[in-house]
Image (cartoon, rainbow, N blue to C red; front, side, top):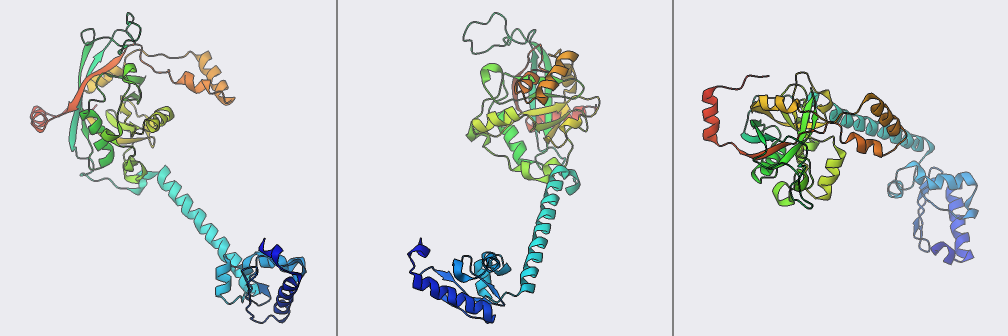
Length: 372
C-alpha cells in the first residue's frame, strides 16, 4: 500500500539509485522514507527485498529477495550491504551446515528417547524402596452382578460374595521416579483404587489395573488436587532405565493405552493406570511403554492366581478379520480389541493403603519373599 501511494517521480528516483549502486558496486546507503526500506548495497548484491519493476533484470530482483545471501535483512544491513558473490555462497553453505547439525541433534534426541536405558546407569540408591503399599484382592464368580437393579451404583458382587485371594505388597522406587511414585502413592492414600477392578489379564505377560473412568464400572476416579495433571518423570531418560517387562512382579505406570491417556486428559488428571508382570517369561511389550515404579515384595502367589483367571479371547478367524479391518482403517477394530483379555470373573481391590514402618520391619524379620 505504501508503494502504491508513491508518485511516479519517487519511484523513478529510487530505481535510479538502485541502478547506480548495482553498476558501480560501491558501498552506498540510502533510506527510502516513502517505502520504509533500507537500501544499503555493495559488492553488486542488494539488501532490498522488493525493488520496483524498473530496477533491473529479473536476476537482480531475485537476488534482492534473498537478503543478499544472509539470513535476515538486519544482518545484511549491519554489514553495510556489502555482500559479494563468494560471501553469498558461503552463507548458503553455512545454512546447509546448520541444517545438517540440526538434523543430527534431532536424531540424537530421538535416539535417547527410543533407547533410554543406555543413557543412565542405575545405582543401589535408585533401586532402594522408599515406601510400601498394599492391595487386598477379592474375586467374584462372574464379571458383573447378574441380579443388579437398574441404576445400581455398583455392578459387581458385594464384599460378602467375594472370595478373598490375599494381600499384595509393593515396594516403591521413590529415588528413581519420585513424581510417579508420589502420584501412585497419593492415589492409594486417597482410596482411588478401592473397589476398582483388574480390567485386563494377558496370561504369561502382565495384568492391568487402575484404568481412569467411572467408579461404577470399577475404574479410578481422581481429582487434580490428588495427583495433579502432569508427570515430569515421563520426559526423563532415567525413568525408562529399568525395563518394565524384564522380570516377574515388576510394577509400572502403563503408558501404551491411548484411551486411558485421553480419558485422563479429559478429566485433567495424571494417568495412574499400572501394570504388574506375571511371568514366567519376560513381557517385551512393556519395555519403553511403561515407567517402573516398584516391585512386588509380598503376595506374588496372588498375582499368579490372578493371571489364571479366564478371559475373553477371540478365535483365529475373528483375529484375522480384526487385522483386516484394522488394515482398512476401521476404528471398530480397535474397539473390539479393547475387550480381549478382559477377565470373565471380576478381580477387585477390596482395600488399599500404605504399609507402616512398623509393619515393614516385622515383615523383614520374617524374611523376604522368594524372587519368582
